[in-house]
Image (cartoon, rainbow, N blue to C red; front, top):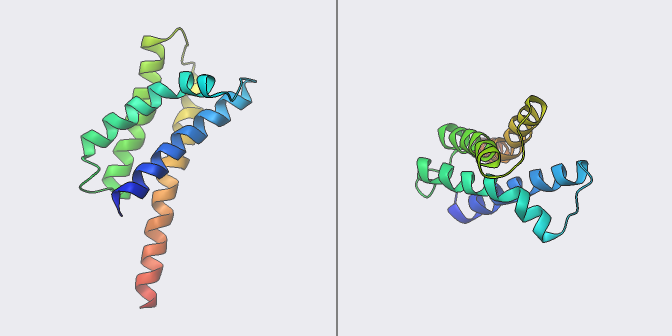
Length: 121
C-alpha cells in the first residue's frame, strides 16, 4: 500500500467516527464541534502511525491492529485526561468497535482485493 492513500483513509475513518458520534448525540457538525471531539483521536492516530512507522509498512497486520488500538485507547485516554468528558463503558465499546470496523475494515478490503487480483493474473 502507498502511504498517502493510507493516511487519507485513516484520517477519513477517524473523522467519520467523530461525525457519526456527534450526530448521534445531537451535536452540531460545525468544524469547531468536530475538531473539539476529533483532536484526541487524531493525536492518538499520529502516535499509532509513529509507533508502527507507517511510512514503512502500512499493512493490515500488525500495523493496522496497532494503529486501531492506539487510536481508540489513546483517544479515549486523552479525551478523559484533557477534557471534562467521561468514557463510560458503552462509549468505550462503541469506540473500539466502530474504529475497528473503520480502521481495519478498509485495510481488509485492500488485502482481499489484492489477493483477488493476484489470483486473476
